[in-house]
Image 1 (cartoon, rainbow, N blue to C red):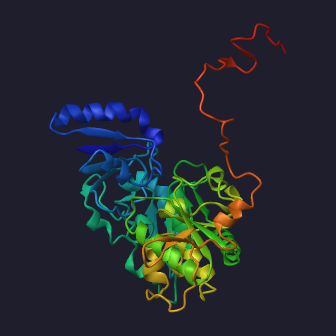
Image 2 (cartoon, helix red, strand yellow; image 1 turned 30 degrees about the vertical axis):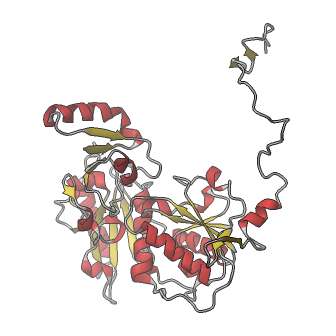
Image 3 (cartoon, one colour; image 1 turned 180 degrees about the horizontal axis):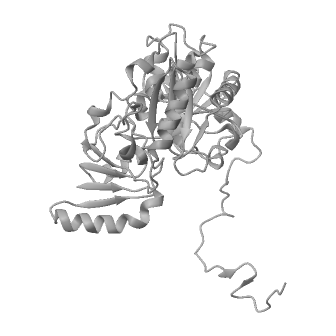
Length: 409
């Protein structure tokens, strides 16, 4: 049983791909098409695949290459029809080496350009953390580097006398580029876009980092935090939620875990009491632009910086990957503190005899709900007693089917 996962842009080809595979593999293998994923298209939808008891997921199109929990995956990236001009890329590498003689130059290709750039010899090429077009078991992808690519060892901790320069081969609007820029904020990043008229320009790393730290300052003064489960397939997601809850609890704030699928401003506005949202998702879906939301939306690492004694974060340790946020960059004690407040972020808790007690206090979401002028639909008996269904109006608002006079504008 094999699941074929397609992004929205490739859905029109799903039937042709499934039919072609069926002709080649026969009737012994069942194929299922996964579409309209609840989260980002770049993540493997393990939950949907497990609903039909699949043994393998074949992921088509762009992928974030985040490690999966249990199912083996085969990544089939979309290949770009635009050819990479090696002469222009070599010219850019030469220009970078002239300006930065001591720097190591690393080419980081977008997945759709990797097949063209993998044999580039003028500079080192960062390879994907998994082998494309082949089955990858979940345990084989746990040791991946930053932003889903293997990072050259000397570029991870560059020598003091020089620095590293990275050349991104791909679109300047790519979500992966944001993850690359944040992970490599201490280095210079150039963009080489084969499809753009201007193939070379540097990325404003400082502006992006400034935006992120502005959001961290907002999070530092908040009292109620919403932990948004932005993925159910990336390995370590459950542990990351638990660690975020512990960080918020130790700072004597309140946290609420929310699962709304892919976060949008309309969905998050349904929780007006929440002041800051922490998105637990893959690196590409965690770095949401502050301009798109009316409240602060941060990553787990930014939460740690906001609520711990680490007032300043070393840019070299900055990462949108929640696994790296808790494992490599900052240490958080696992032992529970002796002094704990009696109230928690939930509305009920268990007594010793397994009965329930109400622990709602001032500032809780339940208390805020009671202060609203509108708290939802209210059932009034017998005025709102169930009645027989009746046929409603049909047509358009300008003229329903039971209206004889047409409104002419």
